[in-house]
Amino acid sequence: MAQDISSQILKGILQGVMLLILEQQPEYGYGLSTKLNHYGLDKIPKGTIYPLLTTMEKRGLIVGKIQPSPAGPDRKYYFITPAGTAAKNEFANEWRQLETVVNQLLDEELKQ
Image 1 (cartoon, rainbow, N blue to C red):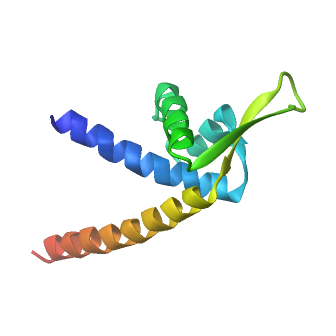
Image 2: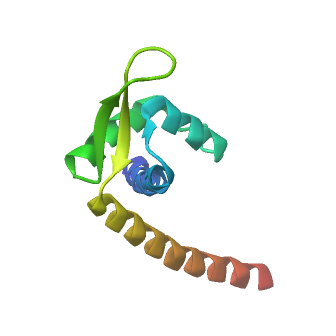
């Protein structure tokens, strides 16, 4: 059960992070994985990213479009949708609230 909760929390956070990245510019799956690595999320299994992209696309948060690649075969690039932007904004607000609460609790713990 604890692993299930942890997994669900990770997927929610990962979805928010992916929306933040896709808002900056469209990416294909491997490019998105590379950006996650750049931000220190290199332990995220590739088998987590692609199913999450599919789920996000089904929910209308992103849309995938096949586009030519400058190096190799065509790639499916993901673009954030207006619904994705709204979900990203909601994630950012919730994250800031959670961050405030956790930081407050950690500060109180350090004072003891």
